[in-house]
Length: 378
Image 1 (cartoon, helix red, strand yellow):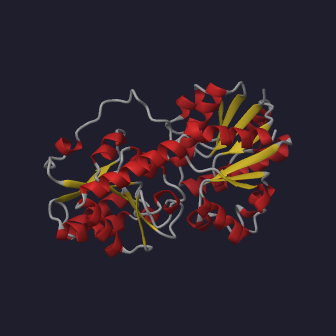
Image 2 (image 1 turned 90 degrees about the vertical axis):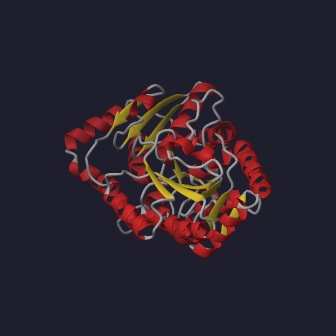
Image 3 (image 1 turned 135 degrees about the vertical axis):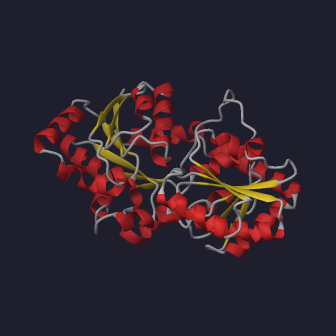
């Protein structure tokens, strides 16, 4: 039995923290290893993590994510930080597992303090490097003992740009939870938004960040709705009080799409939306291997994504949807219409995606590989 120290940047319901929660649950259910968790800040999932392990929160400042991470140690008093480190050292971990690139620098600090190996699960691409100070992550990448990349696109980015040692790199795809047979009953999204039963629905999901391409989603909607007026588009995600949401709302109105493009904002019951979508658009300019696509695939929804925008083409290939040229709005609209107008093709691609997600991208399928990697560092 060993003690695994996990390090995470926050406890939100976003990708890396959510996959970390699934991983820790799986390890607790399938091994006798002890676990502890260090969070650089808190979040809505703290109580769920506390059910699995001791949790130490470094601090909870109210600044933007990258400002918080990069200035955290400078803001903390020496005594406060020494007390926090002493608490972490007391866990006596045998290995450290950082859940993202954002957590890697604190992971290196702990590695050097405790003297054990560090594994970092990396999901980020170029966009994350733009926010980092010059060389901010590079030194840590070279000091880490093992790097677990969330897709081949992620692996290629770091090997090609930062001279990372390929011998310490492995690809283990990002994953979702196992399908829950007892999940809550679904809400009829068509009824919620008064969408006719005969209409088709194209969905998108994500925060309102530039890299997520929420603006691209509205431009594709314009092209599709012009040729298929009974089609509805729904974007799930984004705080309705935010500046970005207000700008998107204005854009949708001026594009003349307010009657067909629904901005649902942040939702907790996202499974109901997945089930309602006939086609899922990943309009991201960059996305390493987004979980929303895997969850959408479970609902048998074919996916359309961009090439050279991350790892999702590795999942979609030529049979679970379409991969179109980078930010080619016309091509994305054309392929959307092809799926909307062909129920047989839509079902065929949706079935392939569901089977692929269940067979290759759930925690029950990937948990053993991750555990093997962790134990190799003991």
